[in-house]
Image (cartoon, rainbow, N blue to C red; front, side, top):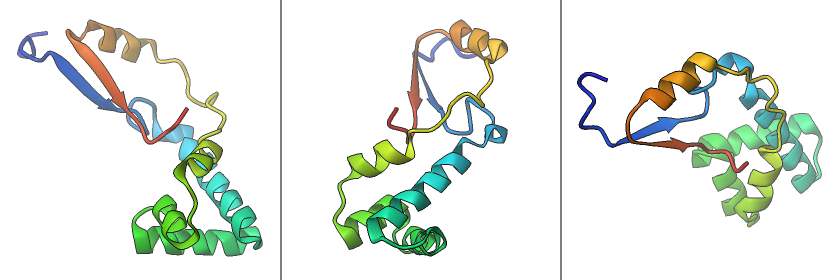
Length: 114
C-alpha cells in the first residue's frame, strides 16, 4: 500500500463501522437494555425505557447510571445486553480481503462483550 508502509498497527472500531448500521444490531441491544432495567426495577417496559434514557442523559451511559443509582456490577448488564443475534451482519468478502491486505497488526475495538 503506497503511503502506508510506515504503519505497523491499524486500529478499527467495530460497532457500526466494520459492519453497516443498517444491520440494526444496536436496536437489539436497546431493547435488551429496556428489558434489563424493567426486571431490575420491577417496572413495565415503557417505564423502564423512560428511566433508562434518563440515566443515559444524566450519566452519559445507561450502565454508569445503573452502577451509580442501583449499585449493579457491569458484567451482568453487559453480558445480558450484548447477547444478541449477529446473523443480520452479512459476510463481506471485499472488506475481509482489504483488511488482510493491510500490512502490520490489526486491532478491533468494540463496546461488546461477546
